Structures are given as structure tokens and as C-alpha cells.
Length: 393
Image (cartoon, rainbow, N blue to C red; front, side, top):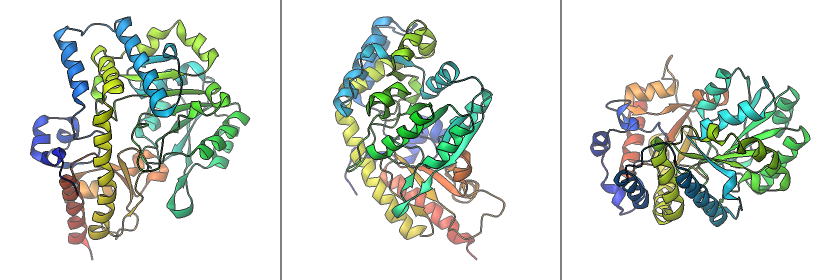
């Protein structure tokens, strides 16, 4: 493994810190919330101290918002080669707030929303709350176990009256980082059906190996025209509680529509969070690369631990994000009426996300976070393996 400062973090210290991840399920090893156990970048911490020193806790000042938009524009250009004017980047509370705004303002009223599944759980709950049907389109397991979008299924969903497709890239929970060819093939379908894309790119900076994130709207003039993008520093720099994301507008008509009601987009974005995002994008690069190297080790460590303690699991190392998707359907039938998430909670004291919450395609699966010290990941898998061993027939 490694000799790293994160190795000194303990379960006890995490519980004492009092995060939701480590207090919501008392007595559990927590692997269910998409947070890191590594704190955040020093530059972000300093930005928050500066905000406190200035008592900058009021409504969002225009100058602070502009700094964030400028910093985001610089980051997009530097990391992805995507040139977006800062005037088209709006602070918002989080990606879900951006999605809610896009769905309500830019899609045909009452039309269904297409969601490739398994998917981030709140998309499945928020959408029906707005009176919209979700059309789930299960992903297809292609060559070598690689998950791919079902383009025929997406075409059929558009034919059923859907107007908006949710694209999550890097994908939560499958960890896919889509290739240029895959995204262009999707764009052909969307354009042929006069559809729109909401592109959730919150995990964009978290990629591994040869995989690189390509912003969907950056592909062509066509994708720019039918897309609204949301991203944030919240996952990559571990600051989701600071309530700041970015809505990125790449369509001239959308820009004209939003410009005069920007306050609706940005209402809910917290002033300290906006300052923290600015610092992350401008000065948090070295910290992020260090974290990515550490999580990269956990990708292969989990593979080895599962082979030793839970060989019935199927697991493909994520190309992006720090989320592992585990197929538990090969386990012996020992859970009874319980889901596997319930089984491991009760029998191993490990907190995981039930894959069924991610859509019908997630039944029999589990979502596990890799953003934890190596020794804690080892404890999690050993506890799960021991629980299965105790109940084997």
C-alpha cells in the first residue's frame, strides 16, 4: 500500500469529527455517503478562514460570485480545454438545484425525463416530486463487463414523449468515464429527437489512469446547443456541505433566458461555499492530485480484498469517481428477506447504499465509497466477509 498521512486517520477520529457519514449509522463502518474522509485542501481551509475574518456571511456579493465564475472558467480551460466565458457560469446551491431549475424552466411541461440506470438516487425521487415521470433505461453490460448506455432504449424513451435526458459523467454509481465516441453517439440520438441533456459532471476531476473527462457540451456546437451542465468542487475537494455548485450555459438562447433571472439560479448558493470553490479551482490542484493517487490505490486494493474475502462479488474498478459498484448477486442466499445492504448493516455493522435505491437495474448491488484510508477499507471488507462466512450453509 502506501506510507501516507491519510493512513493516520482512524475510525475513532472520524466519529469524533461528527460528520453525517460517520454519525448517521452509529457503530458502523461508513461507506454509504459520497464524502471523503480526508478533509479538504489547505487553500480551501484558508479561504474559509478569510471569510470568517471578514465576517463574509451575508448574501452573496456580486464580486465574490464573479470571482468564482472566473475561477471556474479558468479551471475548465486548464483541465479540459473547454473555453467557457465566465458570464455563462452561475453559482447555484448544488447540482440538484441546478437540475430542478433546468427541468422546470427549459423542458416541456409534464414531459418525462430519461434516466440511464443505475443512477444517483435523488434523481429518482426529485423528478416525480415535480410531477414528472422517470423513464429508466438500464445500462447494458458490454464487452469485458464495461457498462454502456442503451442508445436504442434512449431512443424509445424519447419516442414516448420525453424531452430531457440526464447524463452523469463520470457516472455515479458505475464509475464510467465516457469516451468521445460514446458521447458523440449519444448526441446523435438526442439531436435526432430534438431532446435536451442535463449533464451532471460533479465528479469530473476524479478520473484515473488513461481515462480523461470530456465535458459533453464541449464536443460540438450541437452538443453545446442542447445541453446545460452542472459541476462543483464539492466532491473533488470534499466540501458538499458548503452549498455551492456551478450551472454552465452553452446555448445562446438559454443564456438570454437566464441572464435576467440569475438570482433564481443562484439563490441558495452560500457565500463561504462560493469562496471555497474559487480557492479549490485556483489553488487546490496539488492536493487533488495527491488524493487521486491515494484513491487509485484503493481501487486495486478493493479488488484484492474482495478476491480474498468475498470472491462471489463482481467488481470493476471505476474509471472515475470514488464510488465502487458491487454486484452481490453471486452471494449465497443467506440474507433472507433482507436486502444485502440490510444484511451487512445488521451482520457486519457496515453502512452501504442499497443498489435498488439507484433504480431497478441496481437490485442486488451495493454502492461503496473508496475515499477512505486503506486500513479502514480493509476493515470494511473483512467485516463483510466475516459476516457472510458466519451465515454460509
